[in-house]
Amino acid sequence: MSDDKQITPTDKDFQARQQILALAAIVQAAVLVDQIARTGQAEPQAVEATIESLFAFSANTVEEAYGSLENLEIGVRGLRDLLSGNDYGERKSVMRYCLGVLHLHKKLRGDADTSAILRSRLQHTAKQKSFNGNDINTLSNSLSAIYQDTISKYNFRIQITGSAQELQNANNAARIRTLLLAAIRAAYLWHQAGGSRWKLVLQRNRIFAQTKQLLATEIRR
Image 1: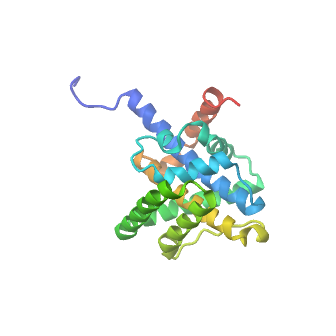
Image 2: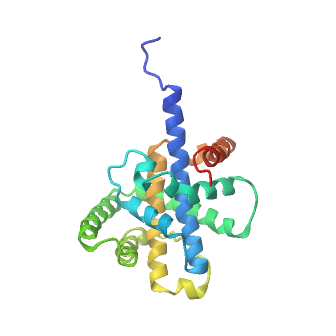
Image 3: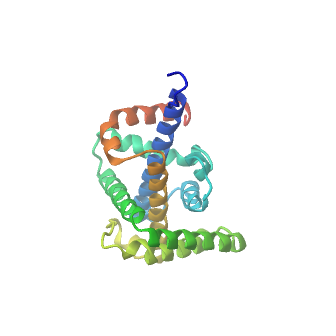
Protein backbone atom coordinates (compact mmCIF):
# COMPACT_ATOMS: atom_id res chain seq x y z
CA MET A 1 0.00 0.00 0.00
CA SER A 2 2.78 2.43 0.84
CA ASP A 3 4.19 2.08 -2.66
CA ASP A 4 0.94 3.05 -4.39
CA LYS A 5 0.99 6.34 -6.29
CA GLN A 6 -1.40 8.72 -4.57
CA ILE A 7 -2.07 12.44 -4.69
CA THR A 8 -0.50 14.02 -1.65
CA PRO A 9 -2.16 16.89 0.24
CA THR A 10 0.36 19.20 -1.39
CA ASP A 11 -0.72 18.05 -4.85
CA LYS A 12 -4.37 18.58 -3.92
CA ASP A 13 -3.64 22.02 -2.52
CA PHE A 14 -1.77 22.98 -5.68
CA GLN A 15 -4.60 21.76 -7.91
CA ALA A 16 -7.22 23.58 -5.81
CA ARG A 17 -5.17 26.78 -5.98
CA GLN A 18 -4.88 26.53 -9.77
CA GLN A 19 -8.62 25.97 -10.10
CA ILE A 20 -9.39 29.02 -7.99
CA LEU A 21 -6.91 31.26 -9.81
CA ALA A 22 -8.21 30.11 -13.20
CA LEU A 23 -11.75 30.88 -12.08
CA ALA A 24 -10.52 34.28 -10.89
CA ALA A 25 -8.99 34.83 -14.34
CA ILE A 26 -12.35 34.13 -15.99
CA VAL A 27 -14.08 36.50 -13.58
CA GLN A 28 -11.41 39.17 -14.08
CA ALA A 29 -11.95 39.20 -17.84
CA ALA A 30 -15.72 39.39 -17.28
CA VAL A 31 -15.35 42.27 -14.80
CA LEU A 32 -13.15 44.17 -17.26
CA VAL A 33 -15.66 43.57 -20.06
CA ASP A 34 -18.41 44.93 -17.83
CA GLN A 35 -16.36 48.01 -16.91
CA ILE A 36 -15.53 48.82 -20.52
CA ALA A 37 -19.13 48.23 -21.62
CA ARG A 38 -20.47 50.59 -18.97
CA THR A 39 -17.75 53.26 -18.76
CA GLY A 40 -15.26 52.73 -21.58
CA GLN A 41 -12.51 52.38 -18.94
CA ALA A 42 -10.83 49.48 -17.13
CA GLU A 43 -7.74 49.05 -14.97
CA PRO A 44 -4.82 49.13 -17.48
CA GLN A 45 -2.52 46.68 -15.66
CA ALA A 46 -5.29 44.09 -15.37
CA VAL A 47 -6.29 44.53 -19.02
CA GLU A 48 -2.69 44.13 -20.18
CA ALA A 49 -2.04 41.06 -18.03
CA THR A 50 -5.31 39.46 -19.16
CA ILE A 51 -4.53 40.03 -22.84
CA GLU A 52 -0.93 38.86 -22.43
CA SER A 53 -2.20 35.56 -21.01
CA LEU A 54 -3.35 34.67 -24.52
CA PHE A 55 0.30 34.35 -25.55
CA ALA A 56 1.48 32.29 -22.54
CA PHE A 57 1.45 29.10 -24.58
CA SER A 58 3.86 27.18 -22.36
CA ALA A 59 2.70 28.42 -18.94
CA ASN A 60 2.51 25.65 -16.34
CA THR A 61 0.53 27.65 -13.79
CA VAL A 62 -2.04 30.43 -13.84
CA GLU A 63 0.47 32.73 -12.13
CA GLU A 64 2.89 32.16 -14.99
CA ALA A 65 0.19 32.94 -17.55
CA TYR A 66 -0.67 36.22 -15.81
CA GLY A 67 2.79 37.25 -14.65
CA SER A 68 1.96 37.39 -10.93
CA LEU A 69 -0.82 36.87 -8.45
CA GLU A 70 -1.15 40.66 -8.11
CA ASN A 71 -2.19 40.83 -11.77
CA LEU A 72 -5.23 38.73 -10.83
CA GLU A 73 -6.36 40.85 -7.88
CA ILE A 74 -9.47 42.15 -9.64
CA GLY A 75 -10.44 38.59 -10.52
CA VAL A 76 -9.86 37.19 -7.04
CA ARG A 77 -11.90 39.99 -5.49
CA GLY A 78 -14.56 39.55 -8.16
CA LEU A 79 -14.76 35.79 -7.52
CA ARG A 80 -15.15 36.41 -3.79
CA ASP A 81 -17.93 38.90 -4.48
CA LEU A 82 -19.78 36.55 -6.84
CA LEU A 83 -19.68 33.75 -4.26
CA SER A 84 -20.65 36.00 -1.35
CA GLY A 85 -24.35 35.78 -2.11
CA ASN A 86 -24.76 39.55 -2.19
CA ASP A 87 -26.79 40.44 -5.28
CA TYR A 88 -25.50 43.71 -6.67
CA GLY A 89 -26.66 44.85 -10.09
CA GLU A 90 -23.36 44.71 -11.99
CA ARG A 91 -22.61 41.22 -10.67
CA LYS A 92 -25.54 39.82 -12.63
CA SER A 93 -23.84 40.85 -15.87
CA VAL A 94 -20.46 39.52 -14.71
CA MET A 95 -22.00 36.17 -13.76
CA ARG A 96 -23.83 35.99 -17.09
CA TYR A 97 -20.59 36.66 -18.99
CA CYS A 98 -18.78 33.96 -16.98
CA LEU A 99 -21.47 31.37 -17.68
CA GLY A 100 -21.40 32.32 -21.35
CA VAL A 101 -17.64 31.89 -21.47
CA LEU A 102 -17.87 28.42 -19.91
CA HIS A 103 -20.49 27.46 -22.52
CA LEU A 104 -18.29 28.69 -25.38
CA HIS A 105 -15.27 26.92 -23.89
CA LYS A 106 -17.19 23.65 -23.91
CA LYS A 107 -18.16 24.17 -27.55
CA LEU A 108 -14.58 24.99 -28.53
CA ARG A 109 -13.16 21.95 -26.73
CA GLY A 110 -15.43 19.79 -28.84
CA ASP A 111 -14.38 21.51 -32.07
CA ALA A 112 -10.85 20.41 -32.94
CA ASP A 113 -10.72 22.27 -36.25
CA THR A 114 -11.65 25.65 -34.79
CA SER A 115 -9.35 25.09 -31.82
CA ALA A 116 -6.44 24.45 -34.18
CA ILE A 117 -7.21 27.57 -36.22
CA LEU A 118 -7.48 29.64 -33.07
CA ARG A 119 -4.14 28.47 -31.73
CA SER A 120 -2.42 29.01 -35.09
CA ARG A 121 -3.82 32.54 -35.37
CA LEU A 122 -2.71 33.36 -31.81
CA GLN A 123 0.80 32.09 -32.52
CA HIS A 124 0.94 34.21 -35.67
CA THR A 125 -0.25 37.26 -33.73
CA ALA A 126 2.41 36.60 -31.09
CA LYS A 127 5.09 36.77 -33.81
CA GLN A 128 3.64 40.02 -35.17
CA LYS A 129 3.47 41.39 -31.63
CA SER A 130 7.20 40.91 -31.18
CA PHE A 131 7.77 43.26 -34.12
CA ASN A 132 4.90 45.71 -33.65
CA GLY A 133 5.10 46.21 -29.88
CA ASN A 134 2.37 46.09 -27.26
CA ASP A 135 -0.03 48.82 -28.34
CA ILE A 136 -3.31 47.67 -26.78
CA ASN A 137 -5.55 49.03 -29.54
CA THR A 138 -3.51 47.43 -32.33
CA LEU A 139 -3.28 44.15 -30.45
CA SER A 140 -6.97 44.18 -29.55
CA ASN A 141 -7.94 44.74 -33.16
CA SER A 142 -5.93 41.69 -34.23
CA LEU A 143 -7.31 39.52 -31.44
CA SER A 144 -10.83 40.77 -31.98
CA ALA A 145 -10.61 39.63 -35.60
CA ILE A 146 -9.55 36.17 -34.40
CA TYR A 147 -12.57 36.05 -32.08
CA GLN A 148 -14.90 37.04 -34.91
CA ASP A 149 -13.43 34.44 -37.27
CA THR A 150 -13.63 31.58 -34.74
CA ILE A 151 -15.80 31.99 -31.65
CA SER A 152 -18.39 34.18 -33.36
CA LYS A 153 -19.21 31.39 -35.78
CA TYR A 154 -21.12 29.59 -33.05
CA ASN A 155 -24.85 30.21 -32.77
CA PHE A 156 -24.48 31.09 -29.10
CA ARG A 157 -23.64 34.75 -28.41
CA ILE A 158 -22.69 36.49 -25.19
CA GLN A 159 -24.92 39.54 -25.06
CA ILE A 160 -22.97 42.50 -23.67
CA THR A 161 -24.97 45.19 -21.90
CA GLY A 162 -23.81 48.68 -21.01
CA SER A 163 -23.66 52.20 -22.41
CA ALA A 164 -24.74 52.36 -26.04
CA GLN A 165 -22.12 55.05 -26.64
CA GLU A 166 -19.32 52.91 -25.24
CA LEU A 167 -20.44 49.75 -27.01
CA GLN A 168 -20.55 51.56 -30.36
CA ASN A 169 -16.93 52.63 -29.94
CA ALA A 170 -14.82 50.39 -32.20
CA ASN A 171 -11.85 50.25 -29.82
CA ASN A 172 -14.09 49.26 -26.92
CA ALA A 173 -15.77 46.56 -28.99
CA ALA A 174 -12.35 45.15 -29.95
CA ARG A 175 -11.15 45.15 -26.34
CA ILE A 176 -14.33 43.39 -25.21
CA ARG A 177 -13.93 40.61 -27.79
CA THR A 178 -10.26 40.27 -26.85
CA LEU A 179 -11.08 39.98 -23.15
CA LEU A 180 -13.75 37.37 -23.87
CA LEU A 181 -11.13 35.41 -25.82
CA ALA A 182 -8.82 35.63 -22.79
CA ALA A 183 -11.66 34.43 -20.58
CA ILE A 184 -12.07 31.35 -22.77
CA ARG A 185 -8.31 30.77 -22.50
CA ALA A 186 -8.68 30.96 -18.70
CA ALA A 187 -11.51 28.41 -18.90
CA TYR A 188 -9.01 26.04 -20.55
CA LEU A 189 -6.64 26.56 -17.62
CA TRP A 190 -9.49 25.83 -15.23
CA HIS A 191 -10.40 22.63 -17.07
CA GLN A 192 -6.75 21.52 -17.20
CA ALA A 193 -6.53 21.97 -13.42
CA GLY A 194 -9.48 19.63 -12.95
CA GLY A 195 -12.19 22.26 -12.73
CA SER A 196 -15.76 21.44 -13.71
CA ARG A 197 -19.15 23.07 -13.30
CA TRP A 198 -20.41 20.41 -10.92
CA LYS A 199 -17.36 20.89 -8.70
CA LEU A 200 -18.00 24.63 -8.74
CA VAL A 201 -21.53 24.02 -7.47
CA LEU A 202 -20.60 21.39 -4.88
CA GLN A 203 -17.49 23.17 -3.60
CA ARG A 204 -18.79 26.73 -3.66
CA ASN A 205 -18.30 27.32 0.08
CA ARG A 206 -14.76 25.93 0.03
CA ILE A 207 -13.83 28.08 -2.97
CA PHE A 208 -15.32 31.14 -1.27
CA ALA A 209 -13.31 30.47 1.90
CA GLN A 210 -10.07 29.91 -0.03
CA THR A 211 -10.64 33.05 -2.07
CA LYS A 212 -11.01 35.09 1.11
CA GLN A 213 -7.84 33.47 2.48
CA LEU A 214 -5.93 34.40 -0.68
CA LEU A 215 -6.99 38.02 -0.28
CA ALA A 216 -6.12 38.04 3.41
CA THR A 217 -2.70 36.40 3.14
CA GLU A 218 -1.32 37.10 -0.35
CA ILE A 219 -3.14 40.16 -1.70
CA ARG A 220 -3.28 42.44 1.30
CA ARG A 221 -4.23 45.86 -0.02
